[in-house]
Figure (cartoon, rainbow, N blue to C red):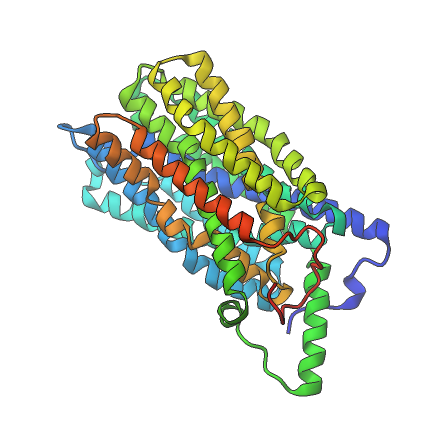
Length: 453
């Protein structure tokens, strides 16, 4: 039994509004810290991990391929984290699960900054990097779902899209910090960057983790979870019925919402990584654009996304989640080919423009509504598990997308059209799933979960 003491619940609209704002901020800050940790690994994979942990003097692109393979390993661990932390969060509450994910992420990221390289300990360096990446992936598997629920379940009924955008804003803030810091250290001469400069972003995470933990420890359990837990315990006491595992209930009653959410997540994530890592790899190996410009462009795009995530989340409270998601999918599909054409033309000015449009609007519209949209597809007592699985099962494929893209670049001598075409197809999958999903922005978030929509 979890602590669902009614005395801890807010009794007035003012108290609830205050707690909702605190939950949204806590969700934003914690998610920003966690995704900062995750994004610096992706950036380091594109820039430094290849020669440091997988050196191949004859063909540097093979080292980058190996680094992206390790990047993908973290995604394999995500569904397991989704199951474990989803179960824990649905059974015992959101707060403790979120604190645990943040501590695991922080420890593994900090330790990456201390790892010896292949030059120092040979293959053991790569093995330790893989281990740290697995811990990162396991933690992230339970992070996003919990952060989304804390924001959405506290939100007023007509503002769930707006409040649900806060963990996504945290994602953008984490990207700004990670790419911004790497943009600075990338200015170092290569000998300094590859000897000690690359470690700075990882070691700095210790400060951010301390801030994130301080804020998350001040969280209280969501009123939606408390109400559902109290009702469920009363029903069990009266009927002597044993509560089923959330994972079992998901596959029994919520298979369709799970599949639809997975399809939407897949399209969004494939497109998102074009901007986050694949564009940088293309620039680094097949254009004359300095890498620092791409990192700065990513930071600027994420800075705009801080506002567009909230804008699209708020708009979805009025016009519906499906409408906004479909718009973002169409916009993303329209911008993919021009994105690569501009990079291939070495046009730095237009590169800044297309990065901002692709991320702030294309990714912004689909990613900004996901927390509210996905949360509203599942009942309260299976919601953490459902939302986490919907986000993380597609990650098994998406995690190896940078690896596949890099391999396609190598096979086509830098021709980006196969990658662009696959991205458009993936966005099409997300669009169809959004079209088939029910509109949820007027649904009752306080359902316990006996019936799937």
